[in-house]
Length: 143
Image (tube, rainbow, N blue to C red; front, top):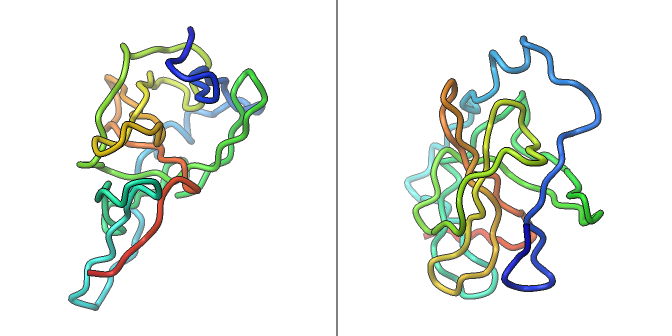
């Protein structure tokens, strides 16, 4: 698979260790994190400042919000998992190749404001979908 830009890597590979059925059973679970403030913390595209999601959408996948993976080209990504991401659009068809999360296919997620590659939408027939967003391409802002 090729990408639209030479610096944007689209291929993914699974993590080195095998994922157990127990891990898959609790693959997508909400983090028990509540804010008592009336201020919502928005997560923005670092490049154009378009609202992508909010901290309230953070979730744990396989017990963690943050994951670090490398694609077949050796590019390392630190991603955060989010239940939804209203500021993302999607490029290309879903793929099962080099999937980081067993049982999920992925699509490239881009900022609808500037079209920079922000991460991936992970979907599965047996589990809820979620977004894996590249953390160094995002910033937070309290509103």
